[in-house]
Amino acid sequence: MATTAHRITARLRPLTLAIFVSGIAPWVPVEKVFMTQLGFTPSLVATMAAAYAAIVPLLEIPSGILADRWSRRGVLMLAGGAGLVSVLVGAISTGVATYIASAMVLGVYFALQSGTVDAIVYDTLLEEAGQAEAYERYFGRMQAWNSAALTGSALVGGVIAGLASPRLAYVLTVPFAAAGVLLLLRFREPQLHRRAARTGTRAQLAATWRAVAGQPRVAAVVVASVLAAATMQMMFEFGPLWLVAAGVATAVFGPYTAGMTATLGLGGVLASRLKFERPAVSAAVALVLFGGGLTLSSGATGVVVIAGQIVLAALLATIGIYLSRLLHDATPSELRTGVASGVSTLSWLTFLPTSLLFGALSRTGGVAGAGWIVVGLAAGVGGTLIGLAHRAERAATVPCGEPVAVAA
Image 1 (tube, helix red, strand yellow):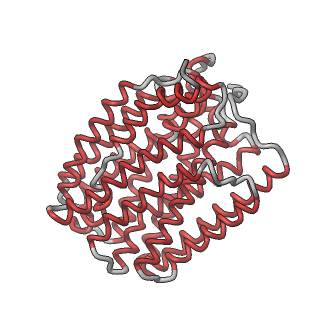
Image 2 (cartoon, one colour):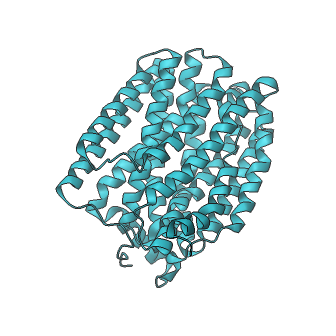
Image 3 (cartoon, helix red, strand yellow):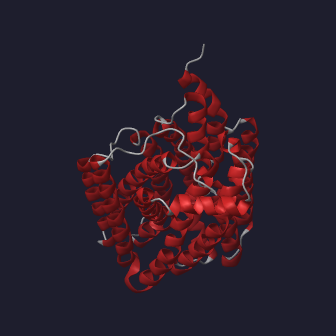
């Protein structure tokens, strides 16, 4: 008879494969180079980021509720379709306006995808094992495979751009994006979210909001999640601009992006090992986060900036998995994706004005001056993480397993 661990692994294997294949995206490492060729400046990059960041909050909560009421696998397939369209439009872009349109479609992908995979993993564990104590391990493993795909394709994308053109990297991404959508058909999604008594959409929306904002014990988790996600988005959206400012050669962008995407996998590995509920561990992590942020505001060399970004991204990825487990622990299955999407919406609403502020500061003080935004965000993440650790030390943590449903 198969063990519980083997059943969980087999159940999640099709989803893991789909995420791995869809993560093969050689366009990612050369995006900023391609955008520069199209006429983008740092200020226009910030405008583009704000454009798709404005799309995401409009769709995230509705898509999360759709996933909870209809099908999480179906919403993931819609997300993959949006990602495919975004890459296609990007590949044919010849100017700033068209590329911003592709970025806005990418915003649709982010909105549909956020909160869905982690909710699926959490509920799969509940169905197969009756509890979700191993969430960090299984979700971290899935994230590690996605990171491996992104890392490998980042190296390939840099070579493609060097030998041919950045545009070709976009074209070669298309078949993998399509294959990722088709592979999801093989996955059998968990059904816990469908077992609860059906309520009206308005009632479910109200219950989702109460789950996010109506539980004081969850408020610190939400704040920490929002700050960590916004900081991570800053790293991946604007990180290459520090390399451009430092005069780093184009050939370095492939290995750099590979290193950044590898941090997602490293975060998956570290998530089940770092004990953030211990105040000493959280304090040490907070100190490293702050130091990593300082490397971006000091006008340091390209090597130092790259090292600082990789350290920041690895810790933020690890923290993100830990916080998502705390959030799911406190949320019933029928609201799980909607709540996670709500928190993600708050993250994007934080990132939107932050990206505009980054653009304004970069015009007057360069990217080093704008780097103080990252320092502030990193300090906020570290502070809330320490607060959560002290709370965990004073009282028992939220127990794993299926929580009591929030009243509609």
